[in-house]
Image 1 (cartoon, helix red, strand yellow):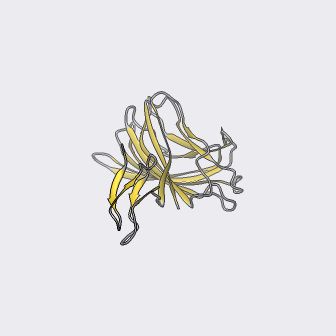
Image 2 (cartoon, rainbow, N blue to C red):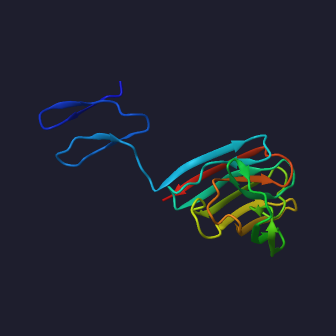
Image 3 (cartoon, rainbow, N blue to C red):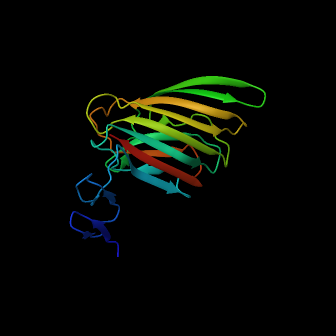
Length: 211
């Protein structure tokens, strides 16, 4: 079971089943087919979900294999009105020192008006993913673009965008830029996302590496 018959220059031949996850590859004219492991410049390196926790965390997901990472929050929901925070992690622990610097631009609209607001944080113990309270039971979607956090040099800037419905019936779009100024030596291997209050009835996050 799982073997394949193919024709070579003299007749039918047997190609034994490959290993799980491999794909069939042609060698072109005059060559026999073979199994190979598919490679890609975009690879999902981690994913996580929860229905009860107060934080979604990832450890040992960043290394020098990839030049940058995209973190996709496909569903973030809170049990109470709250906004979302982010921290780096290293060696299984959150980096909580007050060395996060950030700026956020929020654009929102209602049925009758629209406006924008800008805030900043200087030497905080976190960075925001969103900065306005979501409505209870509402869903936030967001993406974070991260330069290679595992290498030396630079301040490890992160740019994120998000969309959600606030507790004041406003539709929000947040644009955030942040960094931590004490870990430019690459001592980062993970990240955590958590609300300012309550628990996470449903949370789904995926991390992709880009070569």
